[in-house]
Structure formats: C-alpha cells, structure tokens
Length: 317
Ligand SMILES: O=C(O)CCC(=O)C(=O)O
Image 1 (spheres, helix red, strand yellow):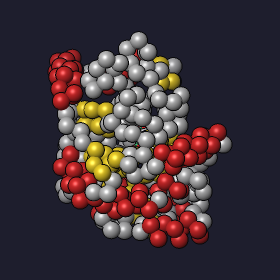
Image 2: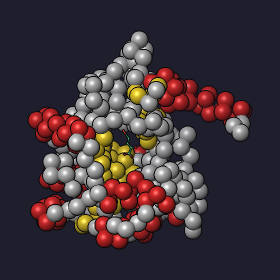
Image 3: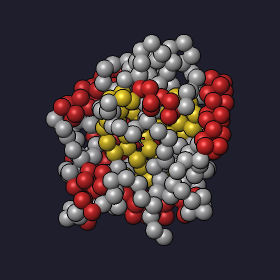
C-alpha cells in the first residue's frame, strides 16, 4: 500500500529536480583523457567520453546490431563475430582500463539492445545490494562499471541514457539530480553499477534539458509495450530503431565475487552464458586488449534457468 504523503513529497522533489535539471554541468571528456575520466566517475558516478569511435564505425555497429536483432542472436558480445569489435576495439579497451584499472575482468555480462522492453523506463541500480546501505556493496568504493555505446544522436533527440548525478553513494534511487546524457554517436558513457540510471531519456521539444519525472514519462511514452513518446510534446528518436551496446567490466576483488554470486541467481545472465561461446580468436584478442576473461560456461552449462530469478531478489548474507 503506497503512502500518500511520501508520494507527494517525492513528486515535489522530482518537480524541483525538473526545474534545476537544465543548470546541471554535464561536460563530455575527451576519449584520450583517462585521468580526467577516472576523476569524474569517482566524484559523480558516471562519465561521458567523447569521440571513442568514428562515424563509420558507428554506422557499421548499427548494421551489426540490426542483424543480431533480425537473426535473434543470443549470447554475449564476445560470442558475436561482428559485435565483439566494439569491446575489442583498442580505443574502447583503453577507455575501459582508464576507468576500471589494469586488466579489467570480463565475465560475459554484455548485450546489444534494439527493442523496447516493458519496464525499461524507471530508475534502478545494477549492483546486488539495492536495499541496504549497511550491505557489503556500500562499504568500500565500487569497482564494477557499465559501459554504454548509444548508436544515435541523444543530444538533439530522445532515446539516450538517464542518470542521477552523484547517486553512487546512496541506495536511495530517488536521490540525485536526474538528467538525460547528451551522448553523440561515437561517445561512450560509463557508470558505476551503484549509480542510479534508466533507459529512454525523453526530451521535451522546447525545453530539451528539462528532465520530467520518469513515472510521468513512462505513463506517457510507454504504451502497449512500445516506446512512443507523444510527438506534440516530445522529440522522437533520431532513427526508427534505438540501438545500443552495453558491457560490464570489473576489478578482480570482493565486489566482483559478490556480483558473480548474484549473477548466478539471475535468469538473464545464466541464459546468456549458456548461449555464449568464446572461440580461440576471441579469447586471444581479449587478452591482447588487456582483459582478464572469466569463463563461467562450464559451471553454468547444466543449470536449470527456470529455477532462477527473473527479477531482482536480494542476496541472502
Ligand atoms: O537501455 C538503456 O539505456 C539502459 C540499459 C541499462 O539499464 C543497463 O544496461 O544497465
């Protein structure tokens, strides 16, 4: 049963956030400036890096995501002979290392996205301990990061990532100035798994930097299982297909141990690993890129996914 005064309080806070959102300072950092990128993500929980990929690389990735979608390709990015080029790209690997540190661990937690899934619009966190500030995830700086490559203009159009600024130090998903990430094709946006985020930033025509409360956006734009923001009010997508590529990289530490324990309880992850095969060429190139591969396919091959959690369930202990 929802508590009316608490809901009203939250709505008034969201409206205040909407009013202040255009004033937020959102600098994009040059892809080559790893030191500034690291400092930014430590302080604010996210960083936008400009110009990692060329426009022709982005056009090629768009083709590959569309093909993966057409052929219903399963498994992680390293499995896909085309889309592995995103994460094995030398400039991308450099960006990942500047954020995560030397030898980032890759455990197959990656995907392409070409469709709207109901529930995608809503602030959430990706780390296992989403409820309790006293839980292990929150006791030391977090070392697992998500990297998103949005394959269209998200400055002048809708469809980008929503973040809450400086939200990586609190379990409260309602805290932190929300904003739409102004990513251009070729940029990489990175955020801590503890940072509050959502898909489908939806920009108003006349005030594109005003960030309306997401429940309002979800109600208006996500109807009948599709994303369709009313054209009279909102900017549309640059292209009919909103395409993106996501991957997670981690330090080899206690946070990763806990995250892996959690991932093994989640249907989507185990299903994806069961559908993944890293051939010898992919493995060798991942090593050249500087990644440590954590291959859980043998361990997870026979797991009955029907017994795993579709949605988030907190870890016990
Ligand atoms: O679709 C998006 O923009 C956000 C995806 C997301 O939440 C994630 O990859 O963790």
